[in-house]
Image 1 (tube, rainbow, N blue to C red):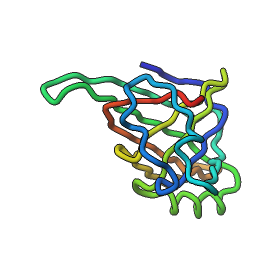
Image 2 (cartoon, rainbow, N blue to C red):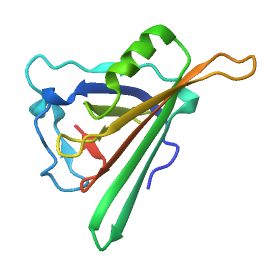
Image 3 (tube, rainbow, N blue to C red):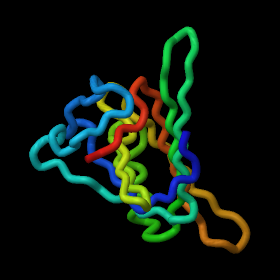
Length: 147
């Protein structure tokens, strides 16, 4: 299980621009460029560094082994552009690439197990408003490491 991993960058790519790699066993290292369609581009989500949290839990029961990944962060800058982007990301339409401070790059989701993106706009007191977003994914492969 990982908790409060230092995150440097969050990016996403449209799910239709990715071939499925979920056949690879849990813990595999994936050359993501081998699974991207020509012309696919990554879009960066500008998060507030101190608000990012990535947690992976593995469960085992009568349904088998599976991973649940929950990733959350807040956005305080470039709000208008980020609200537009957040609306485009709603639902299960993207794969996410998360770069940790130590340089490790994780893939959240796959074509077979698309992650769900949700967001909310929260305002309180005299502080600036924030867009909080959450990415959740349940799969049999968990987080892949991107090479």
